[in-house]
Image 1 (spheres, rainbow, N blue to C red):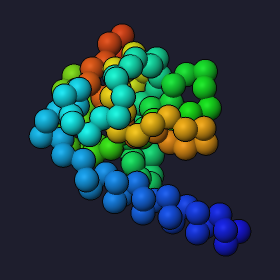
Image 2 (cartoon, one colour; image 1 turned 45 degrees about the vertical axis):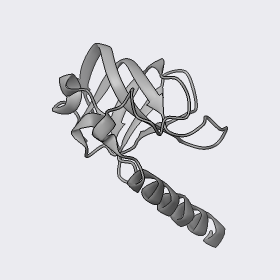
Image 3 (cartoon, one colour; image 1 turned 90 degrees about the horizontal axis):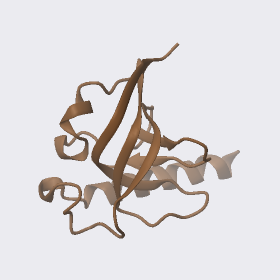
Image 4 (spheres, rainbow, N blue to C red; image 1 turned 30 degrees about the horizontal axis):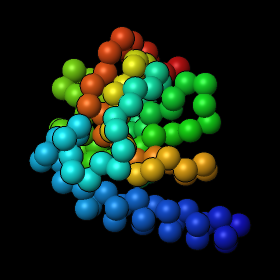
Length: 124
């Protein structure tokens, strides 16, 4: 149990300190800190407790994409910014740009450049 707790604390601190280094003034797709090309995923954007609080689940996978700097207006498209909340989920095709490499068992950190085919659903 202690090992799990320590691991969680280390991962949380790593994500928080890593996110502090990202400068969103350049926007998402043109950000110099991206590690690979942007890509599209069909998924569900939801708000969670923890860091980062906004995450995308690519439907049909066991992965989560964490949206870094989610408090920054440039981390999400304006079209969905006001829809995000704990009481609803946003489904769509998300064009995401990665700040970290994809690794099995680890959350990949991204920003969202665009979203299409949006469907907002209230949580039960």
